[in-house]
Length: 75
Image (cartoon, rainbow, N blue to C red; front, side):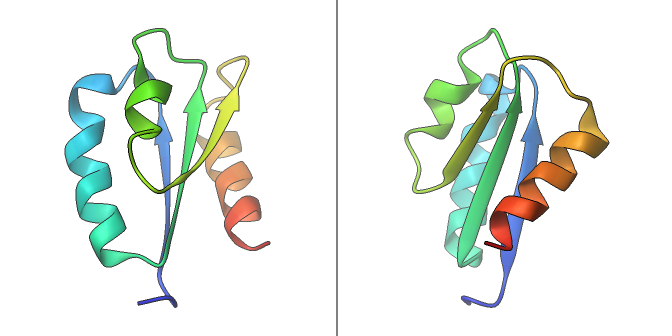
């Protein structure tokens, strides 16, 4: 499974993120979560899982955050 990686872009997703990450970490070798300046505890939820968390200070938008996650997973 190490060949598969996932990039998950979030913004105020604390309510549904745990289920998503639970499935992702079971299926992927690496999971990168890019948080776009959430204010609802999303980063705290992500920290409960074995993922790489990138926390943006501002909401960079989906495309920029997705590119940021892909760049991180490639390193």
